Image (tube, rainbow, N blue to C red; front, side, top):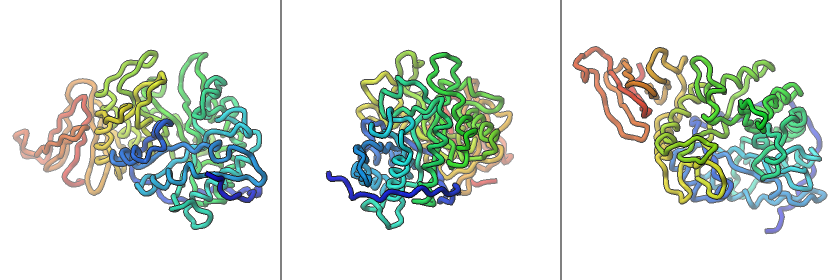
Length: 442
């Protein structure tokens, strides 16, 4: 297809960052399709049917502007239909900028030689997908969230050279800050409602010389003044590193959320938080620990309950579909042949029970066996409960309670079921997470 008409060069205009965008979708449940299949509209429709509200997807600069011309020309044909399909499905898009052209940078995910070229590209992309009726893509798909590179805290040359999925700004936090300072005002000028998302940092607490990630990356970005030039902070999390982030009363992803907030606060910042990669796997080869489809499915409600209780706005399950041919765990909610795993059913149930919910304060019930989190949703009180030890028993003040297994089986429990009519329902729970839904909010 012939390149689109040339876009004019954007002048260097700097504006203060002021997020005035629309409220985020009520559901925090997001996914990412694999790089092999992310262009498949049927697969995205299947993910939507599983309860997905957010889609983090690639936008490769080298596909849009493979050759530098003067004035620059851009071919967005790879993305117009793709993003239009997502909007028709009602999915909120996070566009992950990757794939620096070879003429612009030595590595696909690292610093560029000419920030003006990157700024011009971002201006063209944001203008095309802002939905304002001027220079819009056909069907006017709208993208509000723009994520600047994936795992930019990577400092491994070997990883950076592997493919377009790796960032490469590790040990160069000040350069990443300069990139944000140049690009963000241009994004805001093109679309005042745009949301600039910090590139999802791996930020893995691994005490090893082999750790490819720069643990001080975010501090370096913020110390260089980058804090004013993004709207949402963003990191990745996997339970493989749970012990590094655990703290009293905060386990799993919640511990890393607390650490992120402390890091931002140390620089005088308070930002919404995304987690654009998280999840577990149904099977893996060393060095990854073994897993089972059932354990993966159990982790779905655990991840989202913990994240929502910690106030996270959105969590991307990475990824929706399994990939063959790489030494990577089976992370998908569907397998390589696109057959659903139990985790897909668990994801759908989490969407049905948690989308639109707001955390109680405090959200985690003190003194309860295992973990119990409470949310308010559509005039109801919704709990998520599980325990790794003996069966827990929760006493809930209600005339009746709906107890829903994380895979969907439902049972109604009533006040008098324990032989006492005392306005309290006793709800048992164990290793399998359950949703506890009161008939009405007390």
